Every structure is written in C-alpha cells, then in structure tokens.
Image (cartoon, rainbow, N blue to C red; front, side):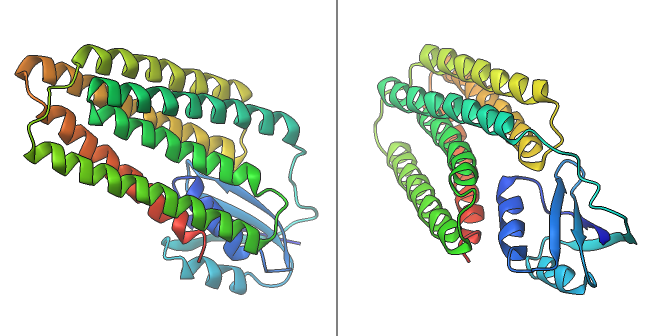
Amino acid sequence: MQKTTFKISKMDCPSEEQMIRMNLAELTNITSLDFDIPNRQLTVFHTDHYDPIFRRLDNLNFDTSIIESISVESNEIAANNTDNEKKLLYQVLAINFFFFVLELSMGFISNSMGLVADSLDMLADSIVYGLALFAVGGTITRKKNIAKSAGYFQFTLAILGFIEVIRRFIGLEEIPEFQVMIMISMLALIGNGMCLYLLQKSKSKEAHMQASMIFTSNDVIVNLGVMIAGGLVYWTNSKYPDLIVGTIVFFIVAQGAFKILKLSK
C-alpha cells in the first residue's frame, strides 16, 4: 500500500473537493482519500504508482504538487462516525436554507438587494451541502447530472440578480429599509454562528466538515458586509451602498455556480 500526499494550492472549498473525488473515482487502484482543505493537502492511499493519480489532479489546474509518497502497512484511516456527521450536515443545511428563505423574503419586502444577494449566497451553500449528501452512493453520471442542474440553477439566479441590480441603479427606486437590513443580517449572523458552533463542536477532521467551516466563516463576512451597507444607507440616505454590496455578493454566487458546473464536466 502506498500513501501519497499532494499539495493542492487552489483547493479551498467543497466544490474543489467534489471535483477531485469525481475525477479520481474511476481509478481502481485508490483505496481511500483523506482531504485536509485548510492546509490544501490531499492524502491518497493506493496501490501501484502515483503517476495516474497525479496526472488527473494536474489536469484540474489546481496547482498540484507532490509532497511525499511512502509505503505503509495499512491505510491508517481511523473509523469515523458517518451517521453523526451526516446528521450534523443536515442540521447545517436546514439552518442555511431557513435563512435563505428569510433573507430572500425580507430582502424584497425591505427593497434590499444586499439581503437578496446574501440569501442566494446561503442558497449556494445549501446546494453544495445538499449535493454532497444527496449524491452519496450514487454513480458518477448521477453526481454529474445533479451538479449540472444545481450549477445552472444557481447561475441563473445570479444573472437575474445582476439584471435587477442594474435596473435599480438606473431606475428610481425607494431607499432600502436599513433597519430591516441590519436586523435580518444580524439574525443570519447568529444562524451562521450556530453552524460554526455545531461544526467546531464535532471536532471532526473530515474534509467536508472542515470545508463547511470555511464556507460558513465566509458567510459571516458577507453578513457583516450587508450590515455595514445598512449603516451606510442610513448615513448617506442612498440606495447605492446596498446595490454595491448586492453586486459583490451576486458575483460571489456566480463564482460558486461556475465551481459547481465544473463538477459536471
């Protein structure tokens, strides 16, 4: 049995992990994969030489290099509590989807594109978590079809968001209700804090759990951005801070959609 560790510099979220898993799935000499997303590393337990594995990783253009390759007696992977981790991910998924619905509805009520964009960012996370959970045990074709549908759906939402932002930039729109922006963003911040607490409480070293923490940490930054935009709306008595933040977040959502679509190739 060989244990080869790769440095993958551009692997920083669940989308890249899923792409790597799908790209390596057809290699029969791989026993298991151990992802370390915070450190951008992948450890592969396999038979035969690592060249076919490296070629597939290198084709993804994630800036892959080899750290070491050694012989081991066993795969050295500790047993994990899959059921508990799935339950925890379902909880995080439920929290994300709840705040997607809340922020989307309140975003339209308060006339805030920042809240609408933030809601789609929450939906993007829900899609990634749901994709990973729903595709467990499925075939490569099934996973790719799910990824393609989710990616196009998310990208369509981002495009519609950009169009609405442009319309509001050039049109005469009411100034967003900054109180609602700040209040709902604070609630979303609490929700993301709950997700972080649950994920950190699990103390799991599994890749999807580590990746979930990274995603949720990024969401906290977006929540703070919308709250700041709400304060600027109040200070300037203008719609533009909200629209600028909305544009930035829609761009983030579109990037996420492209990453998901890569899974279907």
